[in-house]
Image (tube, rainbow, N blue to C red; front, side, top):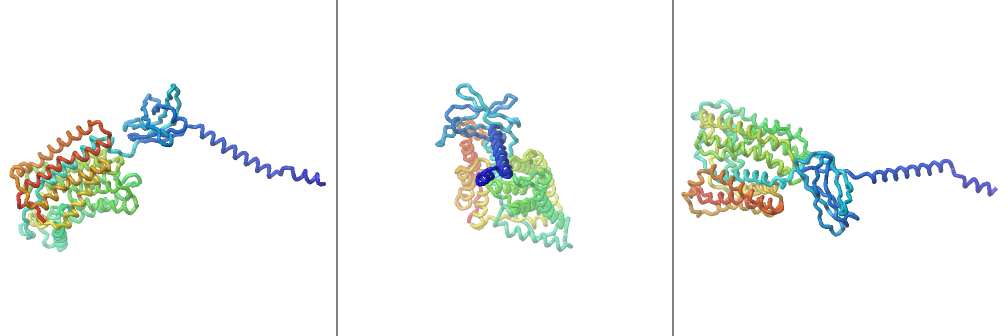
Length: 513
């Protein structure tokens, strides 16, 4: 009985047999899968136009391997081998060209004894990141264009002729019967009166559309509405996951055109877009801040930069220069979007188209200003502020800090973060401090006559800067060292001209505190 019972207890139960079989099958399946996966070479994805690396360890670090990346068309690029680190790993790096053909490549290991083996498979995809260090001469050209704009502002005399404050006395077009028009006229006038001695930049933005308001009366309110609609459309249609630069060429073109016709409307458009990007939580890095600052300047700076290059006399030459400066500013800012966002953007391809549109819009603006001066001289004067020579210290330093922040952001985007960009920023802004707080600056008649030819001076500065950039690029230095040196040396000509400008102004124009 006990024997029979013993036999019964040692007989495998069918359910137990099934469980054991299932465990065995699962173990075999997963083991087979892992072995198969281990036998396959790992495949990785790289972007062209960037430096890529492979880390080798274990037995591979004891041999002097030579690595190359190759494809079936015969393209072969060697890796550079670094020294082993404390862990015994060796890093092999390679810089892939921007124009490297897309597709599948193999990383081949060449041993010291002639043995050859395949390390991994690489899929080269189109690069979406932008590294300014890969195009030092192009970045230098953009920086020189920006410094030229700073020179234009420095060479411009901000004193304005006395404006008449009697409205509608000799105007051909009048809006006396409209209370709404009188209200918006006084609204702009009061805003300019409050800001004129606080922020020169904001004053120019608000005064930008005065000629249009003088001509069209109540219709001028449509421009900010158009800006709001365009900015909202940009915020709703732009994919902000990879970059904050909009991809719609048509909408950016509209922003540029309305920004040149009325800088305030352009600011409204980009401000609404900025609110969308903030609300969706996509402003997270310095590159995002740089991008938004660049877009804001694209919406208002072309009109302001063009206006400061013109004298009070309306000559054809002044209008031609204004049109050229507006197109130049737009072209420079659009090309800068890759550096500001650290990403390759589609709108940069259309920089020439945007510049042409800016030139056309500036021509329309110049004609509109001429018509406004002839048909509505009193209303135009009423809404154009007279810039005084006094500015409170707190407002002066707030404006100086804003200029320093913008210059530092652009320097960081172009040349990378280093102490040189802060030294360059101080170098560019120091003449403003000297101009304000040095009341005994001697006046030079020779410099005054020389700086009256502002366009010629800026052209010479640009040519000198190109020579400096090419000289630095030919130096036997690492790329980041060359970029840092450019950030410092390219600012010297502009800073020198800005400093000499302080000695070319008559005593009546020297700003004192």
